[in-house]
Image (cartoon, rainbow, N blue to C red; front, top):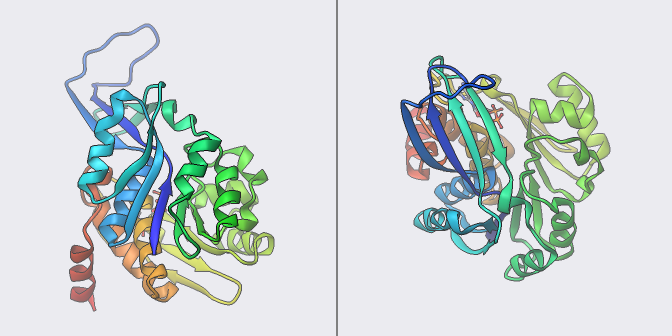
Length: 297
Ligand code: ADP
């Protein structure tokens, strides 16, 4: 089985500032870092580090070719990442002295997905393979439909939530992995059980994973519901917690582990990620996660 992540690749420009820039103000940054980012890229790295064979599809401009190299260095096949005339998607991230952030996002090449790219990207995949999608590229509903027609197993992390999502063909999604905010947006319910109930009434064939940050995560399908508390750690940077969880959960579940065991592996990997700085850089390797899990057993 192979996995295709069809999603965003971003350049994250991170500036350390005494405070967020105010209207009309110019301030100097004391430090600057250029990082790889985008939920698509992060989740491709998470699946690969968890042990899956991964391909990535999406778009970058000339300025983002290094993102393809970064994926290849993680053993992710980046040959389906198209070169676009539009600049690469990027985020301008201000970090103030308290560690809070303020972000400007530019979709760029992530919003230039075409019908031709969808056709080309799905061609190497066969029934039983997995496609994983998020909400940072255009044409997601079209990709869901065509992937399902080819017999792929479709996983969606509907993040960041947007109002158009309720019109997407979510009944064709096999795995829905979302956080509480996205769950509330999709169902208008506020508590976890209400969100899960509403999603399963609407999409009875879907397997749903609802993550609740440091309050843990639920798995639910038509016949089974289980809960995994978060591992107790001192979090320093929660960026990519959800991306790590998604990659590890799907890899475990699709290699035959039970929902409960898959939640546990994913929670362990995500807890390790929140103790380390950075986005994809913070995602642990499978061997580290296994060592941690067996030390706990
Ligand atoms: P997202 O990043 O998509 O908002 P969550 O915040 O729900 O996702 O986090 C996903 C998972 O990561 C949680 O279910 C939990 O297992 C783990 N996690 C997140 N924050 C923490 C934390 N502070 N301590 C331990 N684990 C955490």
